[in-house]
Image 1 (cartoon, helix red, strand yellow):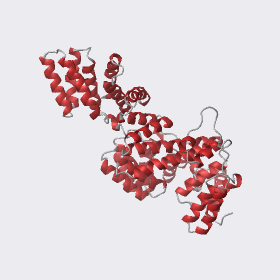
Image 2 (tube, rainbow, N blue to C red):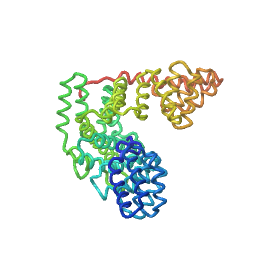
Image 3 (cartoon, rainbow, N blue to C red):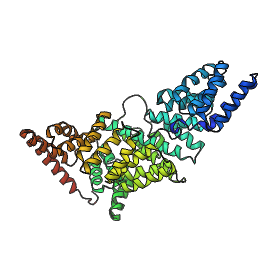
Image 4 (cartoon, one colour):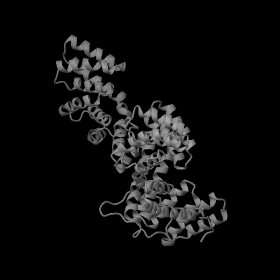
Length: 506
């Protein structure tokens, strides 16, 4: 989930807050202040209306000094500071206002916005919750609250607020995109738990198969679905998934046979299999919500993942029915990326940037997609340009470094890759690239520890092979033989997977 859809950089709430805040200030002055104060208040009000927030700040500071006990004056000062991007200065003023008037809506919303902009996400939640409780239809406050909860990985709570927003404003793409990404995150979190608790479960095999289908890796998905069926012959949805693979590969007759098997499955026992019963009955919200208490069984996690993914699809489908937006292009880009259609993804990121020029997050995603599309020169140009604004970004340093490596510039790659690992020591892909870069520079001993750490992501054996070379060059012949033997084993498995075929129904 990308935070900031409703609170873009701390400025989103400005239009709705400004009139009320200025109204409060005007009332305070009308209650009997001097002509000089009235003149200053009018001047500051004009500056705020003209967007000259920085110039308004010293005037409001003078007014607060002249009338220190007036919460309206201090609120206007805080609002000017927030809108000028000086959120850390605004926060104590907003807190002071709320000590006098704890339920003042503009102060609550602005405090939440300022804390979000100052990266105080946890502290932003409480004032935004109070603001939403006071006015449930306040879209900006609820949107910022949803963003904050999602950023804190409190996805169930965030989804509730995005759902409310989609009801209040059904044509707002931000609400549907936020709702869809929340449910995706709920599914991802449940999958992580399932993998940790039951990595060999047939439910894991079925979910991996679902992912392979999305990536159009039909033969691999076919084998995984059949493996799951051997242990769970009555699991609803597997025969339907196999039918889908047959249709995609031009075997309508086999698809019909699998559809028939799906129809003939007995209905689930709702007492013994509550989550499956709710999902097959179309009650996705209930299936996506696990009862609190004891650790959930693998079966319950499986159906939670299925239900959350279905709810995400429904939200994204609603998004596609709306006019073009940043969120729509972002969704399309992410979908294309998941399907390994990286050129298409770059087109969508560029379309999103046309609607939101200068958006650094979108530019970073464009750099990543250019890299994945193997346009390494363009990826390098994009990432190095962004590194001027985000020099500590592990992702951008990795893209820049690995692009240099693939452009046969290993000496340039090393600095970027070392910076990526300094920012994120767990970035295994950067370990692999740094090891390869050092190997190409003839620094075999230095390459070894990085290649050793990268073996966990070696799907095709290439990193094992390079590590064996490094060991051999560094004089560790026995280690080289051991790693080369592992390399040969990986090659056998890769070859076996290539032989997977889509056969008739079993």
